[in-house]
Picture (cartoon, rainbow over the protein chains, first blue to last red):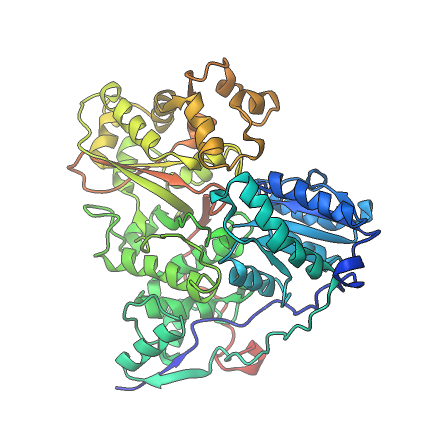
Length: 103
Length: 472
């Protein structure tokens, strides 16, 4: 007995979008004069990693906006805080973000 | 975390996401589901939880930092996912049962067990029996970004072996998955909780769901196949396959539907589980939550509530570990464990007129642990509470109720939930046995969500399958 079967998945419903343009300038100079925001899910040792990253970025001439500006992006207020990210980015003049930590 | 990165990308700001090894494909798939191919990642050299502080920093500087800088500054051409996927009515394979079984397993479309071939005719018949419009959209599945339609629900229902009359239950669950409250996007988290479906109200008898001996075990078609359908649907439509969104370290088998013993609840005058979420015993409701640990409380001995509450409360405590981060941490007042009791135990309370609220209050008072252990579970042992704040600190900040900070003695006993009503109770199982199960829920990562099950024939089948105007 042969069966002709249909697909158990369903079509993608999300419109494709390109990533935001990178900052350019190359790894050596691209972050000088830029402001980088940190987004943290309050897990997996971000409280140790982000200060190290902040020091390195500042040494490259970048400015840093800490994760406190955004709040816990994975906690009980995730939907609200993720929704507010664009407005915080705009208000703080942030050029790029580093988000973590997925583990 | 990827959702936050996507929010930045949507705002026109470049992002880099920090992930540990093994999460790259999930991260990229999450971005794809939200519309962005090629999300930029910076991978740690090892999972951070097992590293010394020095090794963590050294690895980050040597391995990850260059990826962060490059990810923010250097453009990389992205091959956007091409749209070569089948249409809903396309025949994707032809073959015998064995051939289809092999093919579906190879393509990740099956759970590994044999399935009913989802032919177009079977799916059409499955839907037609209830009158639903097959192309009605219930929303967008997360994290896959795929559309949830009646058709996609039905295809997986056919595969699972469900009967057409089960479709209203499947649709109600699919609507829960499509909504914002439940948090289906977290269903692949590493701790591997699996979803529990609890059915309450007249629908239990109406559709023949089993609630007696072996209530939560395979063996009864309705309970078993609807439980299997959920795993298939999470896999095929929501995207939880092992190579992408399912990051369970261990996971659990699919759970059969747990149907409540409505007769015993009526006898006692107790609300169903759905009563905790605003429904009446006359409402047909399915309730969904993801469950971590489950603990058997065997041979509950005693003829009065006072005799049996300590043991039941102990079972709740034994089921409770890192899940306390849902009291505060990953969740807030979202640890709501379920105590499933047999009718015999329920009647021990009912015989002396105890309401469910009284049972909850007694369990709340008895299910306590030392404060130091609570803090260790969410901080020291799991590192799931940033800053490892004490309960006293959290209470001072208004983040947990004052009952958690009546003193600073680390040996003081504190509750495992924020209020008595947080302990949920359901009644099912062998009526002549005195056993119970304590189940720890996964907080906002599959948050208790209920929905009406409407078994009335739908009037929305206004279009013919295959009709272009219907979008097929």
